Length: 204
Image (tube, rainbow, N blue to C red; front, side, top):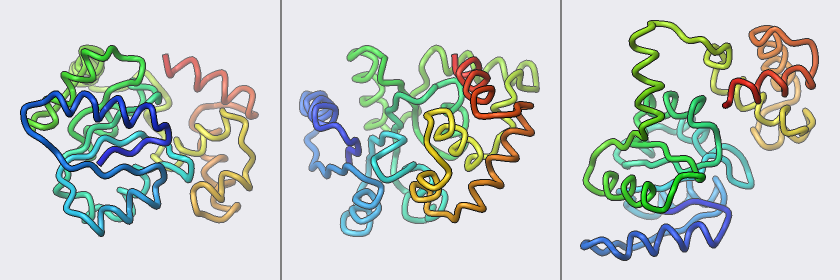
């Protein structure tokens, strides 16, 4: 399965996979709802998933229904920061994380690894994981956010209001306020402007 809300991205991934020796049957999805529906309708073995689709965070759906994804080899292919999300997703069992700014050659390497049942780690992600192991601690306050707090921070930094965030995350607005307050405390910021500045600084 290839899940991305841009047709050109889905087509590009298919073109790479078509050049591999083994042939595959493809399922494409543009929303989290379509991803979830496809997994109940088909026996998906491999999945290349963007993190954020038009109706929310696809990996939040994995958290809500882990059994549905348990036997699927997943490669995350996203514009989201590798520094922040790579280690989190690897811990959840994702088989690799590749940023959309990576080269075509690196994407092909990642896809080949996925199809072989291997874990793909970019040089940058290997360094991040190694430093975390060596140091035994994190230098980034972002890492102390829960997944849902981080998701709210992403939306707030993008200038999205609480009502729209609640809709995207399928939670009530009071819960959004709770996640937002906790994130402000953990990041030691007083307002959305300070939050955005600190979040962008640590994404690099």
